[in-house]
Image (cartoon, rainbow, N blue to C red; front, side, top):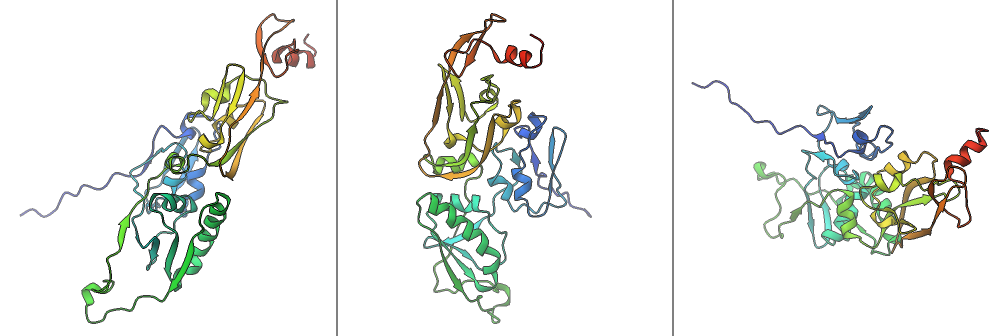
Length: 294
């Protein structure tokens, strides 16, 4: 007789090589860790990992990762009816990043929630409505109901719906900040700020940007907040510290375009890019002069 059964356990959640923490030595992206309610995500030098003993797979990190680097976690399945999420039991709390996708993907416009759970969900709903108001979208309504009565006559179906009620719909939403961009193509969630006075037009920020939110070419420095997912890679590689990325929700965001010029240094005779047409000294020679080397 076979005494033991071989069970195939689900694969443990991992953070794959897309993670900017694994690609950039000084990366400051901590979106996944900031959204984790149990502190299951930690960082070391050029690495990021999920502690499977702590993780209960709430899925919050899936909606905050800028590069879709998290594997083997699925978003929580939620119930809805008549454009309202139905929260009747103590399920994992959604983040505003998740609810903003529910707003467009399923056209959800509110939450019907059992009264004991209101205090838990109210801050998230308030934060969501602030963003929706900025985006000129309908804000979510809150319907508070009493907890469902326990049907003592059917002990095996304590949480069953009444037979005369319409069954609730169930679903999950697309994850990742790129999915959110698809639902809100004209809006932005981050702002890329450029300090022209200190920028030397080296192009490192454009090369490291996976989303093409920064492009340099044809004498134009192009910044498109709509494409930015807030990975902070451009900010990390910019050694003059000329670029800063911060959260900023904006409706109908328009790209910023800065003009630059081709120039030739009178000192080293090498070509370079300049913000002004009459500049004759490249950034390297300018720095050498400041240090007294020239």
